[in-house]
Amino acid sequence: MILDPTGVNYVMNTLQAASYLGVPSDLIETMVEKGSIPFTKVGDRTVFSKAALDYWIYAKSMESLREDLPSLGFQGRRGK
Image (tube, rainbow, N blue to C red; front, side):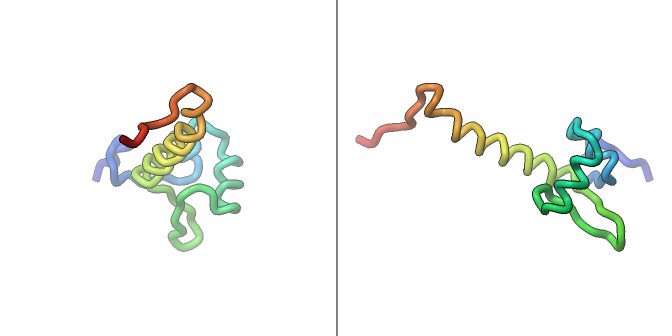
């Protein structure tokens, strides 16, 4: 079986997840301890779903966007 790191069902270990996110692996380990990143335990191994990480990044970026829009002058739609 060939593992495709671009595939939606790809599963990564801590080092791969850190590389994918562009952060140090110790940051990933800290985030796992705090439960602030999506992960799954398989036995004593911690694994990360690419799809879950992609969704998590998307959700975090949308939170940031909602916080930043008012400071950029966007107030949203006004009701009629």
